[in-house]
Image 1 (cartoon, rainbow, N blue to C red):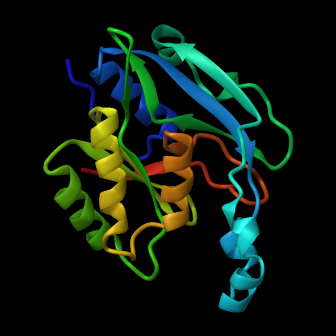
Image 2 (image 1 turned 60 degrees about the horizontal axis):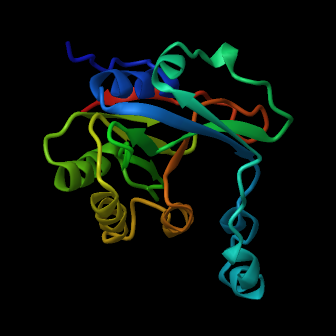
Length: 205
């Protein structure tokens, strides 16, 4: 039986629904990472960006990594996650191990729209993903997307590249970080100073 998304679900609940609907997934990974102002926020002007351009090439590495098998992940709740230090959060990675020792990706995207409403984001997703099931979450500052299907690595790279084309819906830095690391990440937990809102479903696609 196919499980459905509902308004108000958090990102962990959303990802667990995707795992239930994709029985080939056998293993997933969570990472912890710093939560702070990013290079683009710190260097808000063009002159500041050019002056500090070399710092813009930094790719922060995860602080911790936890691998979950399918059953353990489906039994997970936010309260059961290891407590982190200040300015840290847990995120799910898109790259999942599937039956046959094949890696695939849960479609994920972090939208950084500049004065663009949800209609434009939904139009973008419909063009890239067609009529495939998914959902949008409000993360506080931005919007998170999860697709209720899987992508091969080749299709994931094309999926990522497509979001760069309109120039106005995502941050190229997010795409750059994710292509560099070989997987997407979206936040599961809060951080009281920079990420106080728990991402929650606001649109079922």
